Length: 179
View (tube, rainbow, N blue to C red):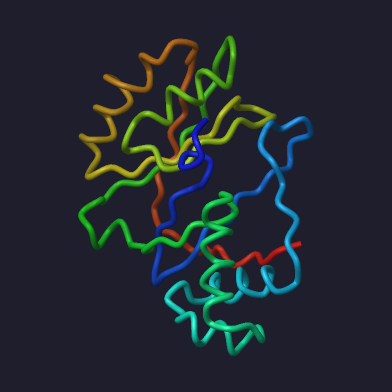
């Protein structure tokens, strides 16, 4: 999986950042040790991804140049990304859904194939009733049906998909901080 796919694209309102999180033991990706200044920068950017380097520098007690370098290093290391967060409804995507996917074979290969669909913005291999969960953003119900029938159901290893259509988003946040 490439670096960009390991980060979940963000949606919602305002500018924000995404943090790369690794919990699985034996994960082939690395965990970056963050000092207190870097953690503070991340938490400030999670609150407002549009903050200026000057404002961040003042808040963390570093020079503007040092903040710019740290932020760029965090981005280059895949720790975070700074993105524009949009509301799918306001940009013409009227149907969102979470898909519970059952699969056979190598789940990593199935997950990788699913990440190739532009409508898919989130894929996780999980334990429990489903082998994978995938979030999709579509223009309408016809688009969702086409994605399911002509795309995802044809992925090698996929045996069953249960679709959970979103009626209303109650909470979405990316401000969990750092450890």
